[in-house]
Amino acid sequence: MSLNGSGLAMKMVVAIIRHERLQEVQDVLDECGVSGVTVTEVKGCGAQRGYTEKYRGAAVHISLRPRLKVEAVMRSEIVDTVVDKLAVAGRTGKGEVGDGKIFVIGVEDAVRIRTGEHGPETVQHAERAMWGH
Ligand SMILES: Nc1ncnc2c1ncn2[C@@H]1O[C@H](COP(=O)(O)OP(=O)(O)OP(=O)(O)O)[C@@H](O)[C@H]1O
Ligand SMILES: [Mg+2]
Image 1: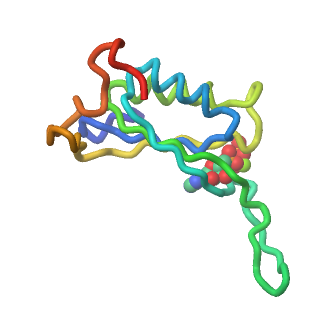
Image 2: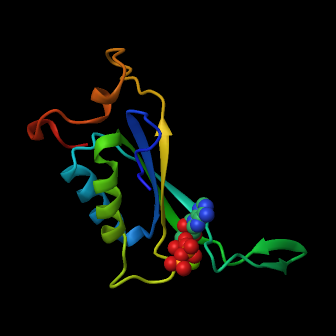
C-alpha cells in the first residue's frame, strides 16, 4: 500500500524515537531537505503495554518510558524515502524492542508566517545552501 495514497501534497511524519537516535534522525531530515522539525519529550509504551501499580495510594503507569517525538512536515513525494531512512536511523543495533514507531499523517496546508505564503514550498529547502535549522 502506498503511503502517498491520500492525494495531499504534504505529509507529517511523526517518529517516536530513543533520545540517543536524535542526531541520526535529524541528519536524515537534513539530507532530504526537510526544512524544519519539532521535537518534544514524551512518555509512552508500545506492544509491551504499560502496567499500573499503586504508589502511595496513586495509580502509576510504571512502564511508560521517556522517548522523543519528532514531527516533520514534508512534500508527499519524499515521504516514503524519509520513512525508510528514519526506520534505519532510529534503530538500535540491528533493532531492539522499544526502538519506536513512525506514523504518517496527511497535511492540508502549511503557512510561512513571515511572508504569508502557503503550500509545499514552505516545508522544503529549495537549495542545499539554504539548509540548516
Ligand atoms: N500505537 C501507538 N500509538 C502511539 N504511540 C505509540 C504506539 N506504539 C508505540 N508508540 C510509541 O512508541 C514508543 C516505542 O514503542 P515500541 O517501539 O515499544 O513499539 P512496539 O510496537 O512495542 O514495538 P517493539 O516490539 O519493537 O517494542 C512507545 O513508548 C510509544 O511512545
Ligand atoms: Mg515495545
